[in-house]
Length: 323
Image 1 (spheres, rainbow, N blue to C red):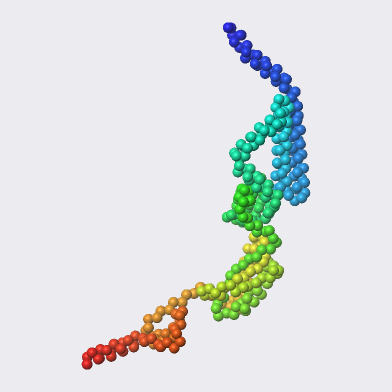
Image 2: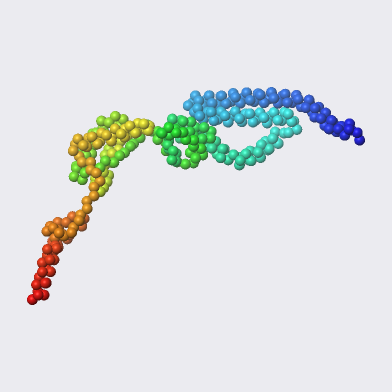
C-alpha cells in the first residue's frame, strides 16, 4: 500500500465534512437570523417588563423580572436555532435533555437559585423597600438596593452589609420605618421622699415642649419600679420613625427632663448603700426597738443588755466569790 492509498480515507472524511458544512451552511444562516431575532425580542421584553413595573413604583421587581424574561427568551431562541441547524433533533428531545440538565444545575447551584427565588418573593410582596431602615439578625441599617441574589444595607456607622436574600426571607426582619412614627422610652429615678405625681407632671410638661416629640399619641410617665435607692418612672414618647429623628428626640428629652426636675427641686439620687454596724458600745444600742436592721423587733420586747450590764454582772459574781 502506497502513501496515497493510506491517506485516502482521511481525505474522504475531510471532503465529506466540507460537503456537509456547505450543506448545513444555509441552516446556519437561518439559525443566526433566528437567534438574532430572539436576541432583539429579549431586549424588547426586558425593557417592556421593566418599564411597566417602573411606572407602578416597582423598579427593583421590574429589573429582576425583566432579566428573567430576557434570558428565558434567549434560551428559547437557542433551542429553536438548534432545531434549525440539526433538523433530526426534535424539540421534545431538546426539552427532555434540558430537563435533565436543569436538575443537575439545580443541585449544583442550589444556594444561588434559593437566593434568587427569595429575592423574587421579597420584591413581589414588598415587606420593605429601598430606603427603609431594617434590622436582620445582628445587622441594622438603611436598605440601599434589593438585587437578585442579596439585599444591600448601609449601616448607621457607614458600612455596607450584603445579606443573602434567603437569610432575609427565612428569618425575622424588623422594619423600623414601616410606620410614620415610632415610640421611644427611658427610665428616670427620683428620690423616695419626692411626690411621684408631681414628678410625673413636671416630666410631661417638659416633654411637651421638646421639638420632635409627636403630640399624638401623647407622651406618658408611668411609675414603674421601686428600686434600691430610687422610684423609677418609665417615660415614653413618639417621634418620627427614622433613626436620625429617634436619636435627636431622645437627646432632647433627656436634657429637658433633667433640667425640669432639677429646677423643680426633685431629687435625682445616685445609687446608695447603707451599712449598719452594731457593736453594742453605745447606750442606745441596748434598745433593740431603736435599731433599723430590716426586721423590727416584736412589740414590747425588752431592751437587750449592753456591755456595761455584762461587766456589772461580772463584778457582782467576783464579789460573791471573794466572800
